[in-house]
Length: 285
Image 1 (cartoon, rainbow, N blue to C red):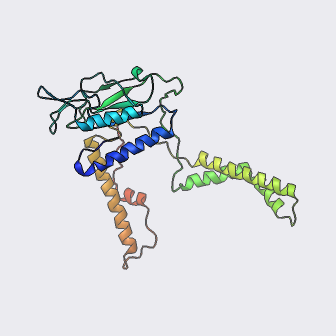
Image 2 (cartoon, rainbow, N blue to C red; image 1 turned 180 degrees about the horizontal axis):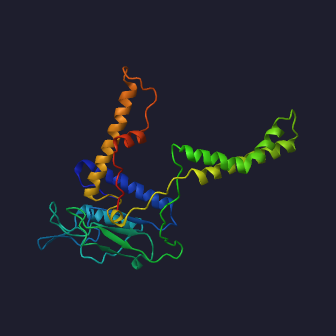
Image 3 (spheres, helix red, strand yellow; image 1 turned 90 degrees about the vertical axis):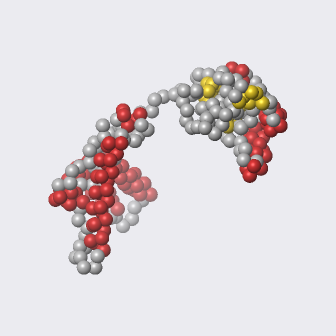
């Protein structure tokens, strides 16, 4: 959370306090951790600037009284300060941190990450939790499940047709003959419904076996380090190919909708690419 300091936003402080109080009241047995940029001297130790220490102000004492009334205790920070004093600030003190309503809050620790300057005036503050034996952290495996191609190539459709009929031709014929009867008993309806579901399930399985595309390759190591983004040099290459792709689509759209052209069905882009010998997009590495 963030406590505002601008005069036009100070009216929100009371609303934030009300929401915190309501949350704790509605969950009296829950372990609650309150984290945020409080813009208050949460340790009531004063603000340091150029070797001079200014005492806490009334807003600091009011916030301390509010948290104590709710049973919120400050989680100890092993670092001397949380604000580093950047381009816009020259004061250093504890204004970022964590509160906990746990009676054993002394077992929790936090620290300021002073070697990671994310912006001009703050260092991030991290909370260290004890190992949790209930929640087991596992390394997520990348989802490499194949996907169905669209549109499905003609060869795959032929393979699907052949495979499905080889497996379910007799079942389809039997079900068709059953449904052609003028009157069916409840048991026959139930059996027909069951066989129909089996045919549909078999058809889905055949689609997965015959019409799947190659799985999406995982991100290379360098792209993972950059959060999934490609290096600048490869970004330029991909942007040029993407621009060509969009220009081709735009030309097809304009040609199909122009009154003086006779194009009733848009040509396939693969044919255009092969005709003009457009290079394929490079594989990221």
